[in-house]
Length: 255
Image (cartoon, rainbow, N blue to C red; front, side):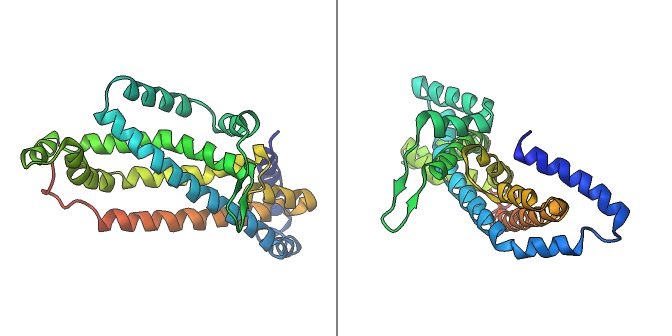
């Protein structure tokens, strides 16, 4: 059984025991153990955050052009992009990560003042490319939702096809893509827990390490980790909600 599965099973068992033997959620000594190791979990949370943002950024940089190619492209490039998306969306993320790390053998990246390990690089590439496959569909739908007449109107005032897409269609499509992008961000945040397969000690893996050290604290560890995930998800969702409201297209301004 995987680390996540073992941790979840132990949490259920601990929850039942806590309900019978203790009027509150968890034991005081176990909570003390968790808070004493909060810095250890905090490092895992920072890795989770870093992986999430780097993967989302990579997914955007690859996914947006891919979505545009699927809408406006043709020929071999359009078919290649479509085929790559189907493969990435149809392959389990753990398989993609293992291929990136053990088969492709992504090298360590030296930035001068610091370096990014091969495992972190493989994690970002795996999560990022998988996200790109889904983001391409978000942006494809958003681009397609803009009325074709607006593209023609841009061409009629002297813009090239590329300029009409860039200045007329893309700003509206980006606004309309925020709800779908919000869901994708949450999915990538949760998918970071899979990087334990290539040896990265992110938040959930570090929680399992603590549970292995003190088996009676599994419920408290699970609750603490869940609170961190909730704060991260809630914060980013509210921020994207604000952006969606702030940059929403007023009714009647576009078809």
